[in-house]
Length: 81
Image (cartoon, rainbow, N blue to C red; front, side, top):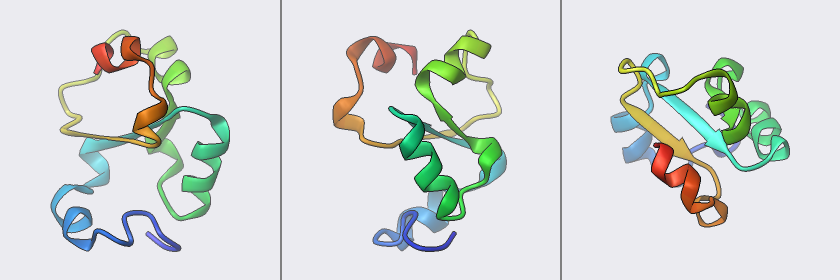
């Protein structure tokens, strides 16, 4: 990762960021674009709407879910994850 994704939290990056078993969910497309520009794999970054429109549930292979701007997330989305 470059330019800041989990930059202030290197202990979390090492412990939790394993791209094959993690996804990043964002509130807006702009947030997704920013994370992609910072080096996050584009195949792992989704808006909540786009992710849950295509999938009913989160696959068991996904062990970690990173949520960008958690405070903006509606309660209905919190229940989904």
